[in-house]
Length: 329
Image (cartoon, rainbow, N blue to C red; front, top):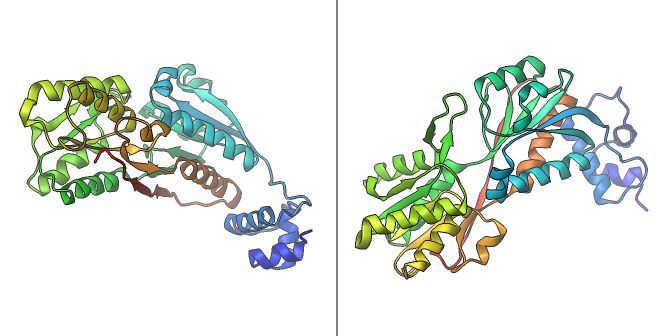
């Protein structure tokens, strides 16, 4: 059976420090990182005496997506489930609020929040008046005030284009959704389309006729957009498409298959997210794996740094991605 001495040796701290951390000594002044190393060492060694983390109460989970949006994009549902899982692991008491309830139902006594989705300026102002502690997942709407953790979509877009160019493609298209601005109610360019345009322009390969976008990241949107591309361009259809998200790519593959267009011999397809269905579609989809578990774990850890370690500066964390090559390229 592991002892405090064993935990101290593995964590690299004194027995006294380890003992006080594991016994939740609130008078001990050590960094969050130190506490985390000790808890991880205790977990790894299955140390059983009082390894319970101090509870963090009154934390709101702002899940600012509709049921329809969650149903259409498993990415966000996975985020919700992982946030709930890691909150439980880290002893964070979460109360979930959804967009349909409105920001005004948020209690004035919350001590911090984790947020997913799009927030208007008024909603952000409301949050600023309640708490200085908060973390946004997948976006950075207030980077001067709140932490955020997100995939590096700019890097992924560049990397995808470079990959396609190395495969010999010079006619590259884009299929994606738009960003709905909650302040104006207007549809704007998504970050992936912005980077796609600028990077291909740098390489003198941008063709406006090869870009197809519409609001929504669901399968149906990808199906309709690819059909539009096929009917509009005919034989001039690009030899490759970078697609903003896997659900859109799944619909795009369906349209290409219906029209009898060989993949990847005539058209290659590359996407983002690596949702579970990506390896089962025809052909299996080449896509960038986003480590959603790490996104959510980091979000919880960032919030705890703010709350328990009284960190004063703001952090924006980008989580890396991995290209999973399958038969669509």
